[in-house]
Amino acid sequence: MFTVRPAEPGDLTAMAELFREMDEFYGETATEPANAKIDQINSVLFADPPLAYAILAWDGSNLVGMAAYSFLWPAALTTKSLYLKELYVSKSYRRRSIGKLLMEHIFKVAIDTDCSRVEWTTDRENTEAQRFYEQLGLSAVSSKVFYRSEGPDALNLFSAAQNDKR
Image (cartoon, rainbow, N blue to C red; front, side, top):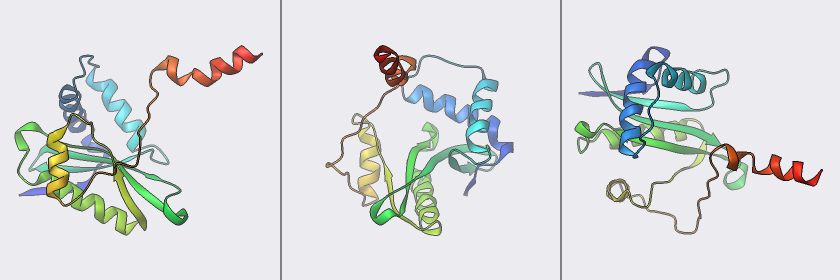
């Protein structure tokens, strides 16, 4: 029997391990010490106010899945939306309805917090995730284009441009 509940400070070590596995899944080759990952998770989920939220799926005392989300505003008619940033199920627990259980909880949070929509992305190459969402009856939105700027140089793009104007 799987249980799903919001993340708590006592879950940090288990979350760091699941995030390590998730990093491997996404092809990350760089590793960081567990205590650094724990500090990062803690500073996001348990800040005042929190910068994001997580729902965790457990098989007894084993953390087997996670859904991380934030709220976005404005959405349609100046409402808010729930943005699902990450849905991850440990490799050895896939195809056991854990992803569906996490999605059910995400949609319940959206309803309970008066969100007008739930939104998320998946990598174009992650066809397994796309099939999963299709099996749940959810469809992709082709009218949106996703942009990303990352890394110190990219994030300093505008400050560098401002300095050039001086």
